[in-house]
Amino acid sequence: MIVLTIILALIAIVVLRALTRKAAFFIAGMTPDVAPALAGSQALTRLRSLLSRFAGRYPALFALIARRVDPHRPTGLPLTLMLLAALYLFALFSGLAEDVLEAQGTIRSDNMINAALNPWRVEPLVSIFLWITNLGSTPAVVATVIIATGFLWPQRSTYIIVSLWVSCLGAVSTTTIGKLLIGRHRPEMMLDVNATGWSFPSGHATAAMAVYGFIAYAIARAMPDFRERFEVVYCTAVLIVLIGFSRMFLGVHYLTDVVGGFLVGGFWLLIGFGITEGNKRQLPSKPSAGKHD
Picture 1 (cartoon, one colour):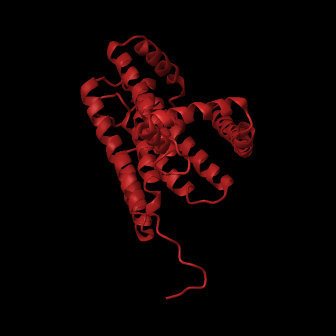
Picture 2 (spheres, rainbow, N blue to C red):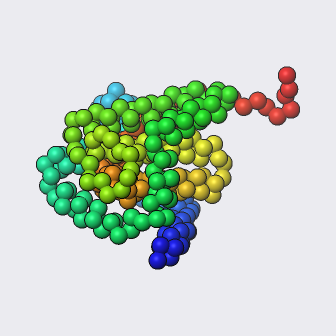
Picture 3 (cartoon, rainbow, N blue to C red):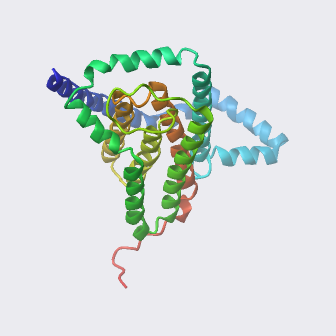
């Protein structure tokens, strides 16, 4: 039964990869056709007329907004969307934290999910998820950040290194403060797993999202081929989800703890994206072919 479960889980991951890949390629293929389709629309013509009037009345304000939504500037639309998404994740986390504090339905659903996993907490699944959960531990995450820094340093990618450390330290500090402020107790331990401190949000889930997510982004952005970028992002997403699920499977966190950790990690991940994209102009110029020292 356990072997069949593992096989089905692997099949599900492969099938989901195929479906996600097809959807990603479909969306990417449609993107070049969107601008020409919008160019001739009446709605866009009316919008341009309104924007022209607004620019005539409020030139300074219009110039500021135009810089913030310029898709060709690293500090324009990309940075604006990232910051808005980060604020949205922060709002979601605030709402989830409030529900946890007031225990409005979260305790019942968390306990139901925790109880439903009890029959599956047997070998070799326990050993597998113990190995997976260690990938989100503090020693593993710190080692990963240091190794990534070592790879990025010779490439003069200082701004990416700064973004990586900001994402990592921001995620860790926010999680620590959140645990102290909320003070939620962990589930009753069903297995001999070393887990100390408060429960909400999950530090493993936070660190996995912020650190592994940013490293995947740093690797993918340097790849010219969309297929390669997709594989990096998808494999990292599977790893992050597995680390979060391992905390629930091992009975050291509730579902809401893991979701809260993903939201905090996602917030700092987007902050790291924003710092990196905002400093694109600092990229070192590549030497021309044929020129040697």
